[in-house]
Amino acid sequence: MTQHDLTLISATDGAALPQEPFLARHLIDGQWRESADGTVFERHSPAHGVLVTRAALGGIAETEAAIVAARRTFDEGVWPSTSGKDRSTLLLRVAELIDRDRERIALMETLESGKPISQARAEIEGAADLWRYAASLARSLHGDSHNALGSDMLGLVLKEPIGVASIVTPWNFPFLIVSQKLPFALAAGCTAIVKPSELTPATTVILGELLMEAGLPAGVVNIVLGYGQPVGALMTTHGDVDMVSFTGSTAVGKAIVAATSASLKKVSLELGGKNPQVVFADADIDAAADAIVFGIYFNAGECCNSGSRIIVQRDVAEDVTERVIALSRKVPFGDPLHPDTQVGAIISPEHQSKIDSHVKAAAGDGATIRLGGGPLNVNGLNDQFYQPTVLSGVTSDMAVAREEVFGPVLSVLEFSTFDEAITLANDAAYGLSAGVWSENVHTCLEFTRRVRAGTVWTNTWMDGFAELPFGGMKESGLGRELGRYGLEEYLEVKTVQMRIGRTRAPWVHAR
Ligand code: NAD
Image (cartoon, rainbow, N blue to C red; front, side):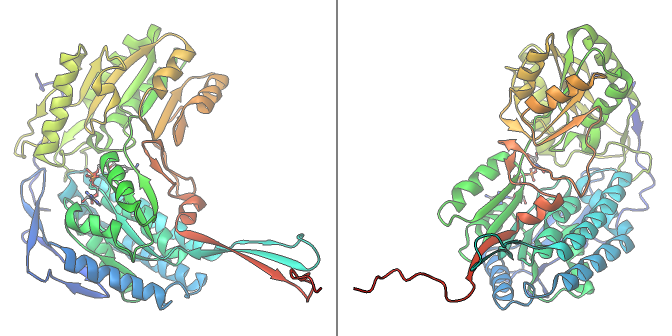
């Protein structure tokens, strides 16, 4: 495959590359700790191959210690009994510190994940907004009262923090995703153990530093670095943990549900997606083509919300495909440290091979590779990039139309009637998000009602707001994050029935 007609940004002068790696340690009970046996793991920047982080490698001992600290801090009531006002003040202080350290956090995020620096900056800014929004919820937290149960009865519904929350996050949006969970857990009054992905530990550690600086009491948030086994697994099965909040693959999400069934912990899951964008012939095709290109290349396609399936009305399918290909050539791929880069490196060589196997299998299944279809070489950088790739002639029985590719690979399917479009859109195990493009409001509304997805975008793609809940139907997850629903995930409901006066009729009848 030729790549000469793509827009590439070669290695910049490298001034932002670190001379020394970031040293990441566990945060347990307010103390920064190495692992008991001194073991570490390393992260090299996917784009440059430079050592960027050396992290303590957690095991059973560190995970146990973190859980004990979170349990004790919850049971002793330090944080759950802090007023909503004081919790809110602390969360606002954290948001200010995130803003202050935005450059430092964004740089580490870029170095570890390979995402463009401009995008990382925007994500850190968005994360600070989530801390502010959660701060507002901390002050408005309340239950219900029932005053019409009869003159001698008052009913109260109390909202209480669920307890100790284990928070496990993936590598694709490390700082943003921990900020979709942790401030909401803290606003509710929970304590937490957090495990970032082994590929991107640094920015969660920086967040830990900011939490300490903001004055969060020791033991309320504990961070353990390491792999799914044994750290993540123990965090999800331990008897002292009340809830698991996980973002990651559907395969690991299912394993967590199986592992937690013995203790019936609450589980909240944000998992994968195979998200359709349906384009009707009456759509604003220019706007749709631009959004399709954004939806598939944003974060190099390593995105749960990747718009990886477009389903286009037959009359305009070729026109839309041609426009998408023309725009794809203009998107700057290359050095994540360059301010103009819009698509950076792939997270790991293994993941790059997985993307490539999906593309080769699709071609074998009969899809046509219209653009890209192989690894991308960028001058002066590691071989960890993938070409913008467009596949046409995809049908919904092909694996590429059903499985998450998690790369810059777009599948184009075609339809004739509205019903056919809905059938194709819903023909997936996933149900995270979906989009519709049409100038007819009735078409948009009917699509919105009939599509099985947690989020529906009409004539737009991948907007997000702290106020609006996010989560998946079907195998895309359980529960919701963000909005007031995001806070509810971390709350238990307690019903209180209070009799007023001595009016209770005796149950035992006097003989
Ligand atoms: P992953 O499932 O491999 O890993 C996620 C996290 O789980 C990591 O921290 C990992 O160490 C840990 N883990 C692995 N095995 C575990 C186990 N047995 N018990 C507990 N923890 C374990 O996912 P990933 O490759 O890091 O991330 C990509 C996936 O995340 C994609 O499927 C993507 O769609 C999904 N994702 C979903 C959302 C969403 O909001 N729905 C957002 C981002 C990413």
